[in-house]
Structure formats: C-alpha cells, structure tokens
Length: 424
Image (tube, rainbow, N blue to C red; front, top):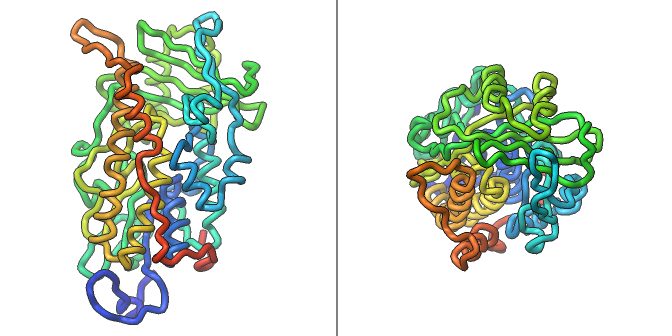
C-alpha cells in the first residue's frame, strides 16, 4: 500500500507548522503483549496505529505472567481490570516439593499483599495477549503474517518495506517484537551487542491435567544438577502448564528450530525425578511449546531517530524477574504518554520515556540476575549469595514493583473512542 502526496505532507516533530486532520501514523512491530498494550494507549492519545506481526495469528498458551504493584494500576487505567481478573489462573498458591512429592515450602497468593511469589494478577501470556488484541482490534490496523523487511528514516518520517512487498510511510516505528527483536537488529545492531545470557534455559508447554492439580502450583528442584520441573493449574481444569529449567553456560540452539529445542530438552532432563518423565511424555503432542535462554537486554538507549523499542526488545529483565509483563505494560503507558505530551516529537518523547523507565528497569533486571544466581549450581569458585533477608533486598523489591511514577498526562489527548476500522 503506497502513500499519496497529501499523506506525505503530514509531518511531526520537525518544527514545521502544518495543519493535520488526524494524529501521527505509528507502526508497532509485535502483537504479543507490549505491542497491543502500546496500541491501546497510542490510539487513546490520538495516533493512527498499525501493528505488524510475523506470525499468522496470535500465539496461544505460554507461561503464566504476573502484574504486580504499579502494573496493576496501568491495567486499571486501561479499563481492563475486570476482564483481566476474570481470565486469571486463580492460583491459590505454590508448593515446593521433593522427589516423592512431599511439601517442603508453601507460598500463598495473598502473601505480601498479592505482590509475592504468586501475584494477585496471574494470567497466561496467550490469554492476556488475546484480551489486549480484542480491546484494540476495532481501532487498530493489525497485519498478521508479515514483517518489516527494510526501514529507512529521515527528518520527517520512516519509510517501511514489508516482506510481502507493501511500502508505507510512518511518523514513528516502535519495536515490541521480543527478546530476539528483528527491528532492534536492523536499526541498533546485532543481538550479541545487547543480549546477556544468565546461564539458564526455560521451557514451557501445556499438558493434560492428569496430575490432580487443583489451584496449587507444584515445583520440584534438584539442587545438585540445578534442574527443576513445575506444574501449574489453569482455568481449564482439564489442562495444566509445565515449565522445565536447567543450567546452560552457553546456548546455541536456534530459537526458531523447535525440533532441536525438544531434543535439547529431552537430553537435559534425562534422569530428573518427580513427575518429569510424565510431563515429558506430552512433549510431542503439545500445541504451544516454547524454549529459550534466560537472557536480558541491556542497552544505553532505547531509541534512534524515529524508531523506539519497548518491552523485551528494549529491556528484557528475563522470566526470572517475574516482571517482564509489568515492564511492558508500564512502558507502554509511559511511552505513549510522553510522546503525546511532547506533541509527538520523537527526540523529546523518547528521551522522557527513557528517563522515567530507566531506574525501574534496572531494579527489575537486578532481581532477574539475583534469581539466576540463586539457581546456579555452586562451584568451587562461586561467590557466596547475598543476604536476601537484608533491608537492601526489601528496598530493591520495592523499587522493582512500585519504583516508577505514572503521570496522569492531563494535557494530552485521552479518548477511548475507536480510531478506525480493524484490518486483520
């Protein structure tokens, strides 16, 4: 789809005084959680939003994700608190068990005011993605089965060539396309510059609930090998989600080669006790297998010209932080708000967004690194773990959960009205 001359006349953030009949055109790459959450706020701030997703449809299932502290307030401001809570896993708590299934330790969902090991809002990643898509589809253009193939930018905008051949021009482009963000690699440089592998690998997939799970999560950890297996109940009582974890100083499996990932998982889980063999028996018939390294993304800047990054693409804190979804939701709110408050000037809006988010991100990444160290297999040269009962850790957790301000952006547009018709 091309753009005509009248569309090309519309510019933002260049100091030119021109009359615009509508808001800026923003392209968002990625339709998991960060992308649709950003689309929600951009649309409310007056932007025309297109979301492009390389997968042919939304990816179902996946691990349970949490919303703690300030992220819960973002969900409330989105007007989605009721529907999100209705879709929650309704997990009562968690038991850690030994190889015979005997309970060693118990954590409850109401511990720490709902911000503990089991969060007050806990929902499957695929379910939250679907809710955010349903919330935005009537006012946002969604393009599935396509991706950004080329991008060039100038003072007035960004020209994008899609893999299917369409060429379009946008005022801003945001990468919300995950840990292995193709847009980040295209604009900022190779993945190796920004990925920090934390020495662990996680795998998630759903299984039939033949284990008698009833609102309680079960986790078995083999301290000697650093491996663990987990089973989690979900709303559908006939199904459950599983997670495996193992240490791996190096990780060189293609994140898109599912067959190789399954072989690796079987090899690394061989001989693990408890219910691991029964869970692995469903590896080939599961519809939603996912495996990847536990990694963080560390960048000095999350923007370049008219291109910005959000969520794992910009600042992955790793699943071991428990805050990846919270960072995505809070970042979406602040990014859209700061851009609108800056009248869509990318230099000002991106800079203010980074300033507000940086300390919040760093606290959550530190939590992720500490939890990775906790799971490491102690070696002869290993450094002793810090005292997690200390006041320093309580302060760090507080910054990781609530350590960011949410302005109300009273001067920026805010309308929940539809901004267009869906194109799916």
